[in-house]
Length: 407
Ligand code: ADP
Ligand code: ASP
Ligand code: MG
Image (tube, rainbow, N blue to C red; front, top):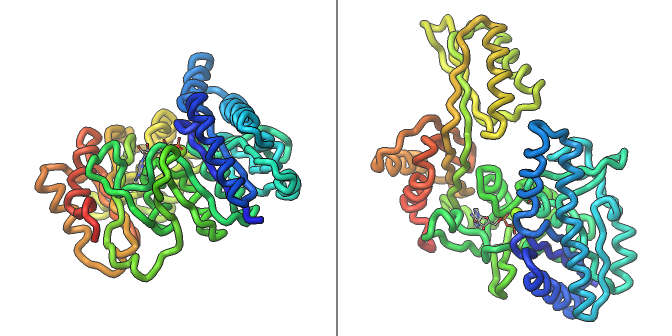
């Protein structure tokens, strides 16, 4: 019998009536002749509340204990979901990450999945029961509870779909698909029928919070068709799939905004082999994830100015590390700009079209939005802009590429 994995996000299980609605969808899939695995997130707002609670108790809570705390949210919703399915007259069993043998590495708060005990799941499915799995959580080899990073229930769902060779992985959420930009920020954004794994992976990594980036990576690797759709409508959503030849025709598929970008600049470093390596070794040793790196010559080539960007949350630690590096090379304290946003356009068609960057820069210039840095890759062009201009810049770029119109 075909397996179908349905994931319901936080707002789609936020109260009793929505839990019943989700339960009915699962039952419908079961009656349609499928074995059904449901993956659920914590009820809307729960994870944020737990994070706040931890902050009230400790300024730097241990990551292991954060995982222990945050994983409780999903345990509440799986039990409630099972009860709702029982109410509807069907059999269901709720299982935590540990109970489905979802083993991860030990990187607390952003662990990666290593394996899943599918035989156990298959046994329960074969009994005709709907299996409800807690998203976002797993367990390491020493039985410590881990979590997969915020938004990680998507990854649980896609990983289960891959492990069970599911026919489809449906992501039910509070928007009815993937849009050309976050519809909350760009009212003109348009729903896409399809998007390639590569494009969605970039969009997710660059700020489109609708999908967890790691879920897309797994989807691509194992060829899982992912269908993102609204949890309260029957309209078709967006298919995330391999690129098709026609897809190249669209130059820009979507635009994203990522807030809270911090840029660190170290000026006056000696221009000698090994300096750049030493700086980034120190940064990496402290587990700081770097996005962009910019290096320019200064003082007629005697010195270099080295800059890099990190995501906002890490500022405190980043500052300490940057100051450490500055002391080591006897240069001025780093300049830290914590008020930047990144605007990106993404599209596989960029590979075969020229002039995309110019169009983006012109549109921003016409609106007098200052570009602080530029980064490009094969299918992405990103600019850093002042944080206050972020939303407007996203709208300007969306308009410049006429993303509201079907091509
Ligand atoms: P869930 O709780 O179901 O996982 P999320 O809040 O994680 O839901 O993701 C859905 C939200 O993602 C939407 O409400 C929307 O504001 C946001 N979003 C950001 N970018 C996009 C996009 N390009 N298309 C659709 N939604 C987007
Ligand atoms: N509950 C977790 C979060 O809020 C995981 C998820 O919703 O995907 O990040
Ligand atoms: Mg989500």
